[in-house]
Amino acid sequence: MRKAICFACLLFLLFSSCLEKRKAAERAVELLVDRVFSMSGENMEDDRPNLKLSAGGFYYGIIFEDGKPVAEVAGYENKDMKNVVVPESIEGMPVVSADFSDGYDLVTVVLPKTIRRFTFANCSSLTMAEIPDSVESLGIFAFEDCTSLIEMEMPKSLKHIGDFANCQSLASIKVPQSVAAIGYKAFEDCFSLKKLRMPRKLKSDYESNPEYFDLGVSDNVVEWY
Image 1: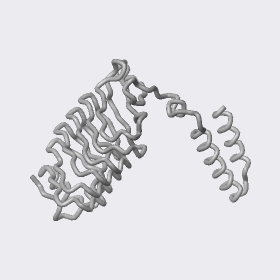
Image 2 (image 1 turned 30 degrees about the horizontal axis):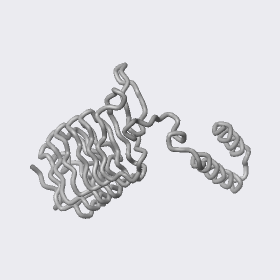
Image 3 (image 1 turned 90 degrees about the vertical axis):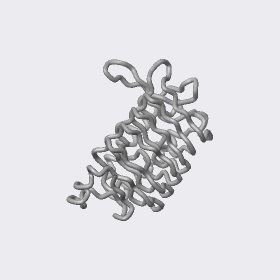
Image 4 (image 1 turned 45 degrees about the vertical axis):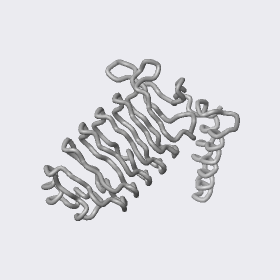
């Protein structure tokens, strides 16, 4: 039913030659698709047909890595839950990633040692995240707009840092010696950041290529160790 509706909407767009009509048609499609995916009487599992619901209340998908099934957590059923501990496994499969970027009201979260990828973008209530040593990369949207984040110890296994932009409550952070690359303006709009401890091995890159190695903070905040 949904596919038929979306296909009909697409045909409508293709035959809308006038710009104003096209804009109106596009808006109509947006409203219709929103309506289709927010019908009363349907639960989240119905709206996300590729996901399953675990006994612990986590939504998850299944992918294969090295020929073996693993689980990717994509939120949880009870959005009122404030303190979350992500399980190491679901249905016997190791949990390798977690996505809580849909505006969950998380306050604290603990990730398992099996985790390798995650994002908490737009979790504005998140104050603390415990990240295991299995994580080697903090993605582009890992902590973007986590405006209440005040505490986050980076694992010693970390090699790449993507984005902490707009983490307005973060006062200090230490980048581990294992890190080899940091995203452009990774700490932009972190207004409370008073101390950013950086590995000395990255100092020459920082000084010789300031236009590319821009951390998004003033020089007096950076401390090399």
